[in-house]
Amino acid sequence: MSGLNRLPAWLGIFLVPLFLAACGASSQDELRQWMAEQRNQTKAAPEPISEPKKFVPQLYSQGGAIDPFSIQRLAQSIKHDSSRVADNAALLAPELARRKEALESFPLDSVAMVGSLVREGKPVALLRVDNLLYQVREGNYLGQNYGRITKITETELAVREIAQDASGEWVERPVKLQLLESSKK
Image 1 (cartoon, helix red, strand yellow):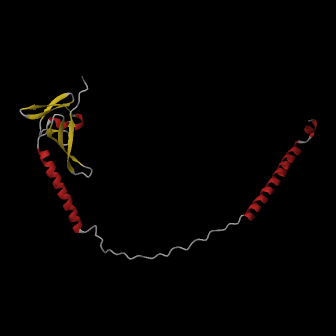
Image 2 (image 1 turned 180 degrees about the vertical axis):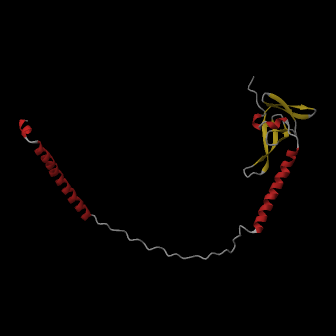
Image 3 (image 1 turned 90 degrees about the horizontal axis):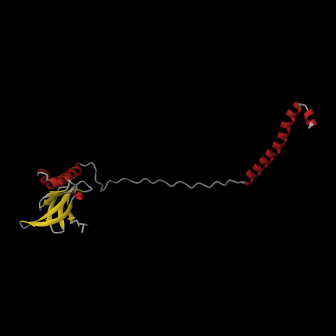
């Protein structure tokens, strides 16, 4: 150790970079040689490009096509829409002109049939809505879709509703309320 201490500091500054340069030069030469070999061994063979297809223009013929902007087509469409509106109005007009009944403010799924009886020779259904009991006859209305009672039996209540379908048209649809079986014994 005493020998290393005797070396001048400036000599150490020159020797360290010299040793590092000697180590690095040989690895770079090997790397350059390997890359040159790889470059010589690899032969790029490009694929030939196929010839483009020849464009053949086609004639446009309007032959049997219907002009979407024709006056006749527009008039036909308006006539079809107005007839559909007239049908809807004929179905819905009587419902809009009459006075609403108490049970029409409740959705039909909140109404339960709990019994039936015969009064003055005509069937009467007992309906429970919000823990209140109502008596209804054929011709009474219930539900929010203009539901009219068409038939009452001992076990069910038939209702005709007027509701909008997916296309927005008003259609009649039959609905049945079944007698609610009591779970109490």
